Image (cartoon, rainbow, N blue to C red; front, top):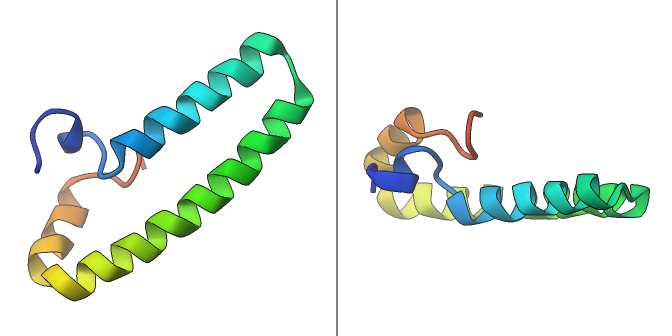
Length: 76
């Protein structure tokens, strides 16, 4: 999928989740939430990397092409 939200991010659900988490941390001005966001990002990123390795093994060149065209999160 390269249209719609999947053309902007290979992981739009996780990107939205992390942005929402960041918004709550900023809105509530809570350092504990900001620390929890860092932990959430690390855990989410590790899960995404494992998923990408699996998808690369299953879909090969097609997935590699998709990875070149669509960023992992929103802009990176």
